[in-house]
Structure formats: C-alpha cells, structure tokens
Image (cartoon, rainbow over all chains, first blue to last red; front, top):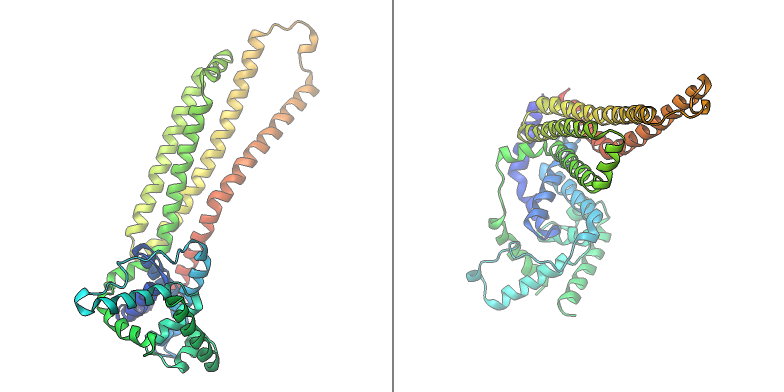
Length: 164
Length: 211
C-alpha cells in the first residue's frame, strides 16, 4: 500500500516537476537556493499527499501546495535574500533568439519580479502560467475580485520598478 | 503591449532550460530530511570535539602542568586525555557512519532503523560524556585529597575530620558533582535535544506512512 502510494506520488511529481522548477526560478537567486526550495516543495507535497487523493487534478493541487511552501520559506528567509543578486544561470536566454533590446528588456522584467514580495511573486507566476483569475483566486485562496485588484497593483508596481 | 504579456511568451521558451530530475532522484528526495538532521549531528560532534581540543590546548599551559605535577596528577591527566580522545573519535566515526548510511538509504523501513540507531548513538554519547566527567571529577578529587594527606603533616587534632564532618564533606561533594553533571546534561539536552526531537518527528511520520 505504502509502496504503491510512493510510486504513484513520485510518478506524478516526475511528470509535473516543471511547476516546481519554475516556482524555484521565481523565488530563488542561485542554483543552491533552487535545489533547496525544490527539495522542500517535494517534501511538503509528499507530506500532504495522503490528503490529496484525487479531489482535484494533481497539477492544480501541486500549484497550491508548492506556492504555499515557497511563500512560507521565503518569509522565513526574507532577511537573507538580496533581491539585487541576479544570477545569470537563471533565465538563460539564448542570444540568437532575441535582439539586444528585447533581451535587455526581459532581463529588466525578471529583475523587477525578483524584487516583488512573496505574494506578488505568486500572482505573477500564475499569470505567466496562463491561469485565469478564477484559477488564480482558487490557488491562492483569495476572492476573484481581490486577485484582479492585486494583479493590477502588481502590474503598476512592475512598471514603476522598470521605469522609476 | 502589456509588459507581462511579453514576458509570458518568453516564459514558455524558458521551459526548455528547466532542469529535469529522474524518478529515482525525486524518490530519494522524499527521505532527505533525516539525512540533513543526521548531518548536523555529525557536524556538531566535530565542532564540539574541536572546541574541546582548543580549550584543552589553551588551558593546559606550563602553569597548568606544573600544578598537575604538584598534585601528582600528570599521569592521570595524560591517561584521561588519551582515553577520552579515543572514545570521542570512536563516536565521531559512528556519527559519520550514521550520516553515510542515511544518505544512501532509499527504503522507509531501513531509514527508520537508521534513525533509531542514530538516536541510540547520540544517547550513548551523552551518557559517555556524563560518566567520564563524573569519573574525572571523582578521581581528581581523590588524588588531590590523597596527595594532600601524604604531604601535609597533621599539626593538630583539628586537621582530622570527625564522622559528622565527613558526612558533610561527602554531602558537599555529591552536591557539587550533581550540579556539575546537571549543567553538562542541560547543555547536551539543548544541543542534541532539538535535533533528536526533529528526528523523532520524522520517524513518526515515516511510521504513519508504513501502516
């Protein structure tokens, strides 16, 4: 029984691991941080897995648990994280895919996202993942109206960081 | 165009640069937590050993050895050092072994066994520290008293203890020893207690999954 559960869980996570990796990219600044957060997300997912048992899609459930883990961990570590520390290993953009100007602009955008607070990062992440407001509100446990309002604020915040 | 929409396009392209873990790597990760606790136990034991050694070297200057000679404790001190270092080395080795086994363990039941083993090792280690501190204390005291009795000639009857005085004297020693060991025990409770508690929690979680 337990072995089956383990196998089932690891199979699910292997398939959907991109979700966790992308969250790690938003919330961490280097490879070590990425690995630590990924591991913590894995552990939290595994601990919560017995309660999951298919009442929603695995990926939907995973978004919720993984983001909560990142938000909690980020809060604990807040003081140690330097938002300016931008590691080029993250968001590696192939030079031939973009012209210099776009590349520069994207880098600024990613830098700006790194400076947002934990909840705002979660909003941006879900937005980039192409989630609609119903899904965003469901994942973060806020109302849809609240999600819209917050998202608009985040957009304004991002603009003001990029064009001070 | 919305800034974020530009980013959204790039976000999809980023997917190809994401790392990909295999089934086995993820599987091992589920059990990693105990691994890091045991690693800390290992690191703390080494730090403790280093701190003890440094204190010994700093405190044991010529003056110290001179005093030891006065009390006729030189041999005892050297023997006590050698024995305690040997036993401490053994424990560091055991902690390292535990750390190594746990980091390569991939089944829940074996991990549970290893957690119990680590807890036992830590308990033995604390017992060793307490017992050796107690013995060192008593032996040193005994040697000092014997030395004192042999070198100092009793000049008057006052120098001899009567029964009541002996009882008080022994009572005082027991009290001092108890406080001394109590403080050591407390320090170890704090250092290893926290880690052991976490390890225990992890063990219970694993057990729940086993059922």
